[in-house]
Image (cartoon, rainbow, N blue to C red; front, side):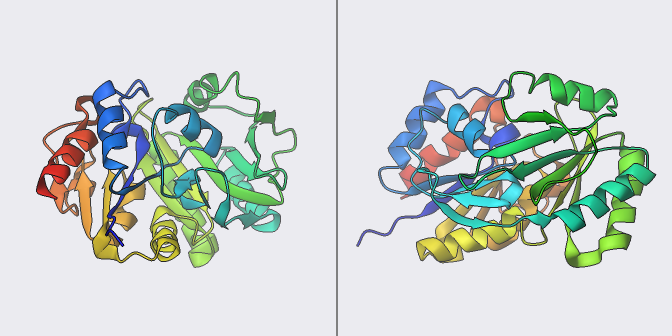
Amino acid sequence: MMHRPLYITDLDHTFLRSDLSLSEFSIHTWNQKAQEALMGVATARSFSKSKELLSKLHINAPLILLDGAIIVTAERKLIDMKTLDKETGDAVVDVGSAHGIDPFIIGVKDNDLNEAFLYPRKLNDYQKEVLKGYKDDPRMQFNTHNRTMEQNLKIVYFGYEAQLRLLYESIKETFGNTVEAKLSPEKYGGGWFLTILHPEGDKSHALAKVIEYLGKHPEDVTVFGDSVNDVGMFSLAGTSVAVANALEEVKAVADVVLPHSNDEDAVAHYLTNATLRD
């Protein structure tokens, strides 16, 4: 049987251009590579949005979605899902309320893995900007009582660094290892975001599951990324690749730092050279 390497890329600021488009070069290169390799993604985005953004690509490896909370095939067959229960979710929201900030909550609303995206009653400037980008999204629901769902995929706070850093410390102190909390700069709006997940709902655990599911070894895997939530994958994969616009702390732990940014088709250039090397 032919050996097929596995390539997994982050989307925003890594594979996608900053306007969320893909060049013809990136599309062609990806689809050529998919003839000989397994090609998948690891993103904070949902299934529906990922499929929309990647509609011209041949994806033949599982999709790691919502920061790792869900793993599905391209045909939407569920491989794994890690959620926070309502009790934990509501307790997280209460800590946020004590810091004067309410979250966005993404949860599963039915057995077909359809998501609901709850937005809060009280919005800061950054949250208002985020909400604009989802104004026509059918998943959006006003969170009247500021409570979470039965199955919460992720709880996300957008805001100012100083406020979110204090909240991050409170979450870590209150919940310890019972949740995964990631604090990162948000490149679109200039603010910061804090994501709360199941402790095994991150990209690193999801990548380990995908490797197991496909019967691969870590040395078979190349991952691409730019941000803090990609670092766990970097430590697991045989080859980790940071794009030129990646955060410095991400470049510091990458095996390869590319000379091209996401707007210069960095991943596609690497895949072209990988084909030549192969």
